[in-house]
Image (cartoon, rainbow, N blue to C red; front, side, top):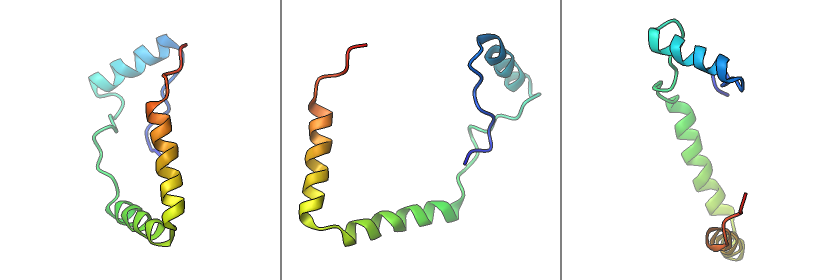
Length: 76
C-alpha cells in the first residue's frame, strides 16, 4: 500500500495539505523510489503469467483491450 496520506475531498483541507507540503510541515512522498524487491517480483510475475497463458487466451485479452481502446469515449 501507500505510505502517503489520502488526498482529502474537502477543498479547504486539500489547500491546507498543499500548503503544508510546500512549507515542509508535511513530508512530500511523491518522489520516493519504489522498493527494488517489489519491482523485481512484479517483473517476474508478468513473465510467469505470459509463460502459462495459452495463445488463445492472449488473443482474447488482446481483442478485448483493442475493443476498449477503439470504442467511443463515454460522454459524461
